Image 1 (cartoon, rainbow, N blue to C red):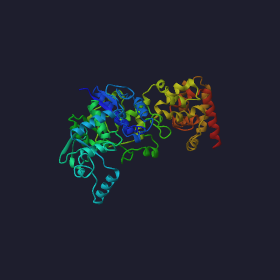
Image 2: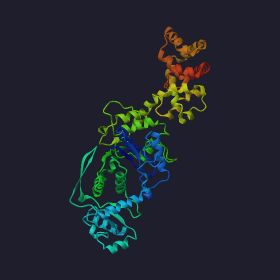
Image 3: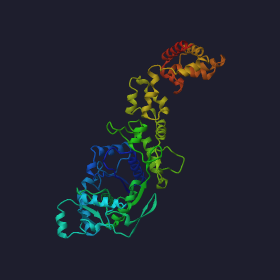
Image 4: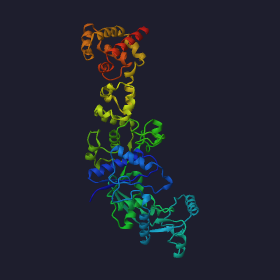
Length: 494
């Protein structure tokens, strides 16, 4: 049987990274098993529909490289792939359940249900509409045919008829056998008053008709699994495999990661920008490869020490056995480190193609662009880091005062004057290092003081890439000018 796995988000806003991680596991499982990855849009809750969400979801998947094999934008033989376009299919199947006595019409108004809920709470109980009390309400189990026909002209819902006294057993590939006493389950609503199905009903019908072999989703849906099994049993259908993924937790490890956490601590929780409301990983300078690599590590490991993976490597190395049961703590610094590994391994010419890079290089001599990227790429954790890393190329930076005082006490003025004299005589800057080292040794100059003085003179601080590469990029005239400026500044501090 061909493996078919669906990712089925609701278009209620931007796609959270928890959803992207679910999509990734769906995608990897499908590809590892040479199967089909499907995008299905679960838009039955029209009150929560947000314009632009579906396009956002598609764009996010395409950016990460997880292009659906089937879906609203890609087509396929099992459409429509939007649930809002499958209403007639749900009506047909709801009638089948009603005819089999597995579901029933319910005509109760909100006031009646609210009163019943209030009375249950007064007694310290949770209200459940089910086997214990369904015969006390207005539904097709308690009304005559004539009454039912009359009420079908108004508002109604359809509920699943859950038989009491049964133990429902379901197997999850990650969590093992799960059992549920049917006495503790509601008669869940399957069809709402607006004629649209609930999640429980629609996803079971669609998964069966689309020949989904493995359902992979977040652990928040685990409590719904027994209800879904009852629906498969009601239709006499064989249920697919189930896998429920662990949550992505806050950086503290306590609770589910939310947009509020990102806003508070200054990191994105969405793959792409969502208007002006929220920034995405892409716009924060992440490579798609780095973003996906980090998400894969949230709740999964390969069983080896390897942490850096391409998408192709993940497709090959993925296994269900590597998925953990417990939640995975989000660590933005680790995400940046993973992204840094991918950036460092790239060719400068490939990095140069990103618009984020070209924007930051505006105003810099174009002949130096690739040389700068080659020099600095191993210092970049995100693409947006380049602006800070190239501040020194345009003009001298403010000197770090603590370092100035420290170097003055070690004779930096004399050292810089000596370097200035030597540099004037050097015709090729690639020979500067070979000229300075013998001079320092001959005159008993500490090499560390010499290198630190040169770096502060050129970039204003001690951190940065290779100082002789910086000299080459600045050129002889600018290097001489900056050393002379530093000598003047150091003199003013004596």
